[in-house]
Length: 557
Image (cartoon, rainbow, N blue to C red):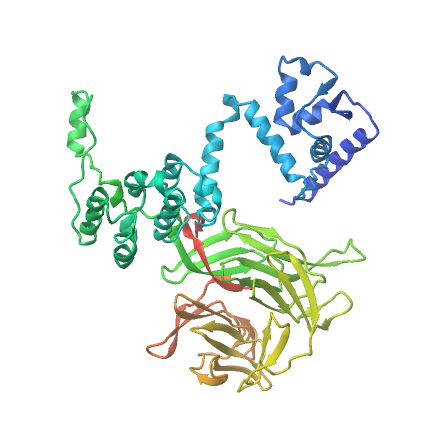
């Protein structure tokens, strides 16, 4: 369904409400904060704020007064809140966020009743910590947690970690922060660590020999259980207590079922949430984002968003952050700036694409890479002032969210390296075969260039660049001449996805450019390319990235 009429109606309603407010029409209440007064409408306040709705529907004295006095809030903050309720526009800054946060905290502290769902708030906070555990353990606030609070968190299956060693190390950091008072809590807290998920070498070198553990006989007995489990010897599970159980038919049914017993907590080997993260091939297009698992031969929906423009470029950073940059969108209603260009980041938690600062000028068909915590946009085409090629480089700093524009000499049929600390380019050994529209990736510390377009047409040749020796060498040819091949390195393998090849058409025997949607993998022992998937429709019109995503968040196709 087209959402344009709905958005138009919302805008029309908001504009009408703002007009009534600005012209002081139908005003039926006034909010007084300190020495300032804010005329407004009860209906708007009740419809947009649970706080005011509860106030106006209650028997409180404020529900009948025209002038309502509010305390513990600054007039400027209240003005911003009212603006948001009438316009859905909120200008958050580093200066006003603390004041808004203080108002929210004060409200929760003063109104702690059942309807505030404090339990749900605590659960949400716990889920937040589990989701961002690897980041939160680096903050001082983590070290201030009490033993019971820490136990609740590190016992959870929902911890978003890929290695159990991270739980053990964070626990030791927590003890070290107040060693005198916290060592006594270790015997209980160690039952929250799932040692059977830790590699045996790490357990021997880092756990058994740790200064907090090796001198405690009680802890040594617990760790002996883990050692036995590594050897395949598990204790007999203890059954739940039968105290207080009543006889009768129900009890007989339980005995027939032979209820399963429990192992000690220190032998728990259930994987954490973050351990379901897999290396996947991410296919990004304007019809959605799909992830393919080449090992399990399964496809997952990563995002159903269709906001991704065509002719975009995509990038995955070393920190597994996924960005989409560029592509061109045309808005015929905007006569001055009809073209716009997206800069988006993928949020794996919400499966949504988040807006980032846009490029200084819309462009497409450029190169995209990262270095030194920066994203580099190189060359491409700009249609703002007529279609022409660009020789500029845009650098986006991910920490400061600043963009810088640099101009360089065009680099035709050459291989160059850019030093982001010196802001300079340097020539390297040239390709053996000049080409464009090729697949390229770094694999095992070497640069692979596969297929592409030469002066004489398509090619299937492959070249490998040794970074240490600054030399190019020939490599096993790809089975078919192609252009625009997607080449990625993932899980120790080289994968080639899609591209264009010259194929006979249904209407003519003459070969025509045809988009391919297959997946190939290079077999190093046999030194050959093997097709692993003949066709994957989701690859059509996509950019391809190797990413790590948690399959528990994704919907299997």
